[in-house]
Structures are given as structure tokens and as C-alpha cells.
Amino acid sequence: MYRCEATSVQGFIQQLAVSYVGRGYWFYVAGAVPEGKDPSVVDEKLIKKYEIGISKWSRARRRRAGLASIQYIRFGRFFVLLATLGEHRFFAEEGEIRDIRRFPIRCYGYSISYRQGRDGKWHPSVRIDAAEFAVLKARLLRVALTGSVDFLASRVRALRFAAYAPVRNQYRQLLRELNRKRRLASLEALPGGILPTRRRVVGPFERMGTRDH
Image (tube, rainbow, N blue to C red):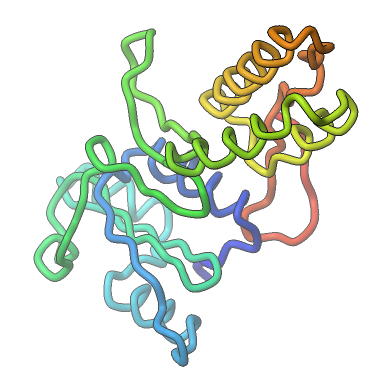
């Protein structure tokens, strides 16, 4: 049974970025199941149409033969179809196919892309979407001078974004700006220890069971 329905936003983002984009599924179509339509019916139709539910051995054989493989994942009504490089009916029948190396997937406040790192290698990149981050930052900076250290620390700790490396960098940027504003007003700075240092790995298709990473 091919599992495609993520049980949480965090699981959806993790499976999409780490398990799919990070393994060469760079070409995608994103969409939403229309209201009034059963998402499970759409799942079944797409999985059957593109023969997605094949074994990993079959996928390996397809790659060696120069054929593309397809993955599909959905959370709620939002879904993404992804393909590797190669020949497949997906490329002929789907419109608006995008390359994640050029066009990030933006969903649930995140931006997922595939970028070249400082080490010269390409990696999946998960960060808070720029527009979402601007709103988040503005909201916290508005209370930077009126909120107590405990209040602001609780607000920062409550941020819902999983601590991927780019997200951690954004959190550090946010903390620097909060503390810069507070220091100019001779107020106590927020401690760096309030920021997450590890990302919690989740079971994308399970409701229970997590571990730190």
C-alpha cells in the first residue's frame, strides 16, 4: 500500500524535502483537491494513473533505464506530484511543471527548494517563506520594548516552524533584531538558549512516535 497522506504539516514538509527532493525528485506540480471532492479518491486516481505505488527496486530499474519515477504526497487538501529526471507520461500530461531548483514549493508558511551549499554540493533547503517571516518578525518587534523577557521568550519558543538549518538561521536573525532593539532602549536582552538547536524527526504517515535529530 502506497502511503501518501501525511498526518501533520511537519511530516509533510519532512517527507517532501528530505525523502523526495533530497533524492532527486526535482520536477513537480502542486495543487489542491477541490472542496466537495474526496481527497482519497484523488489519491487513488493519481497513484493508479502514474503507477506510483511500485517497489523501490522497480524505481531503481526505471532510473537505470533512463525513465523517471513519480512520488505523490498530500496533507489536508494540498498535494504535490514529483518526478525525477527521465521519460514519463507525467511530463506530457501535466501542465505547469516546475523545477524546484528554480521555483520553490511554498506551502504552510515554508519555502522548500534545492540549493547549492557552501560545500559546493546540492541540498534540500527548508526555510520560513520570506513573506511569512516578515509578518512574524514585525509582530514580535512590535512588542520588543513592551514585553518582558519571559513573555518574549515564550513567544519565540512557541514559533511553530521545524528547526531546519535555514530556519535556525532565520530564528537567530530574529533574535538579533529583537535584542538590538531592546539594547537601544537599555532593556535586558533575550538569551540565545530560547532558540531550538535540533529538529524533531517525525513519522510523516504516523500519528505517534518522534525522535530528535
